[in-house]
Image 1 (cartoon, one colour):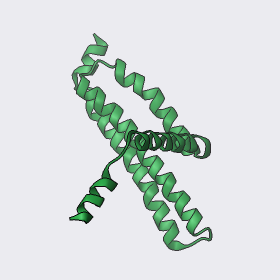
Image 2 (cartoon, rainbow, N blue to C red):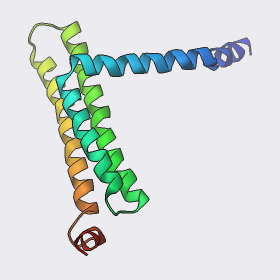
Image 3 (cartoon, rainbow, N blue to C red):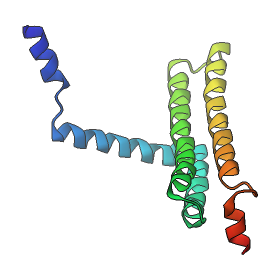
Length: 136
């Protein structure tokens, strides 16, 4: 019984812990901006396309999907960068498994780009009403 009480107390989070978590997340975001050129490029890509997604004459769900596909690229790029940093930290020398791990993380970024292209293509397909609204 005492073990359950201790486990419950450990799971409780204070507002101070929440603020610290947000601060760590912001620190991670700025570390990626500072040290990861790929993340900066992806962020520029997203910053340019989010306003386009907002002004296109599509419904709110389509806009949300288009923006979510861009945010997914940023998320996967952050994870890819973290994996690469971990591998470089733990095993700085070249190793075939380290290469495989990095290649697989890179493939995840590539798939997130494909996902974005597919989502935007489906939602903006010429047979879609978007094109009819833009032409008229």
